[in-house]
Length: 163
Image 1: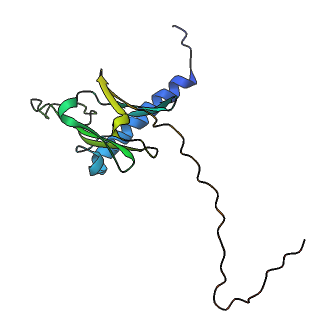
Image 2: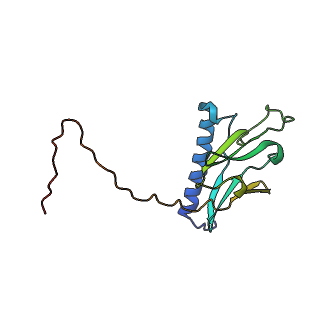
Image 3: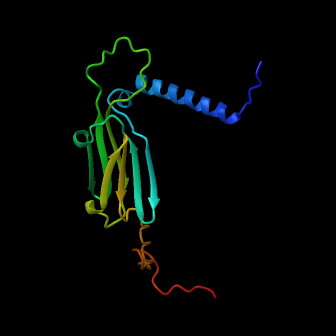
């Protein structure tokens, strides 16, 4: 009998896979808007200097026909759909984990970042969107003193504060 090294990390990875499988099964069975008609592609958002880099995992998508990227009201919108191959018969499936349907992801953009700052490239099932200047921190608003007025029925006179 061979000695096998045990790793708690492998155990937790196995448990995570099992939980994801269970969550996927429950989602597709009990939550209709997350089942057959929708899916949420995995997304990574990172920064490169002042630029925002978004990567979406959307394999098996006709990028020209089924994906739309737009900038509207200070936000980047990425939407699309992944269609099932119509030639496949649903009967005879032993397991079905792939998701098909529509998706939409929205990210807020800093003020002044428009559509000209957005570039997109699709390669090997990954949509990579670069937003030039999209990671610039917003300038904090200037502090302004607010004047306090006296309401009706308030005593008039000068407020005296002890030193």
